[in-house]
Length: 181
Image (cartoon, rainbow, N blue to C red; front, side, top):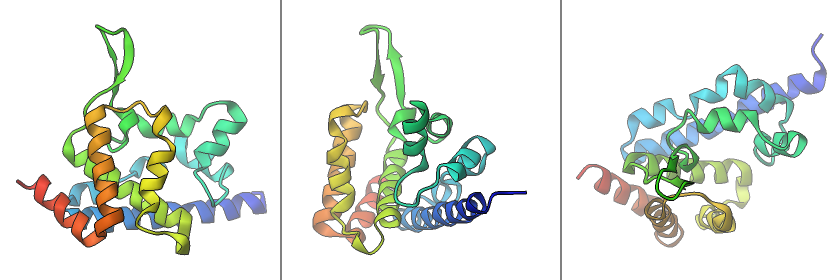
């Protein structure tokens, strides 16, 4: 028999993931990224990500954080980032010259999808307290530890700043223009 709390977590996690995917799809469509909108985060339904995310579900933050605190790492996140090109962590590789892991410049369509993902995540986790500056503030909080290509970081920051200052309509129109030129 399934534990009542786990069953509730399954339902709540499904609701969170589906709500997040809905917002990302809506944003991707506004940006002209139809395929990315339809296929965004499908790996979250794989057993590797789904089971642990239901067990670690809290509702106010990513279950990956809870798994990391418990184990020291997140199997769900490692699986997720390795299959989803809209995460800058996917775009890291060993540089044979520097002999270090480095960020690789991301293709524009994945930076745009990452932007949509960050806006959607902020909306889902913040609810009514969301503002258009929230994704930029979150971006700045993680700057010191991010392994991302400088050009990718600059573009993402520019889009998040544009959202904060000009709003969604202007920013999505800009993304459509730069993607489809």
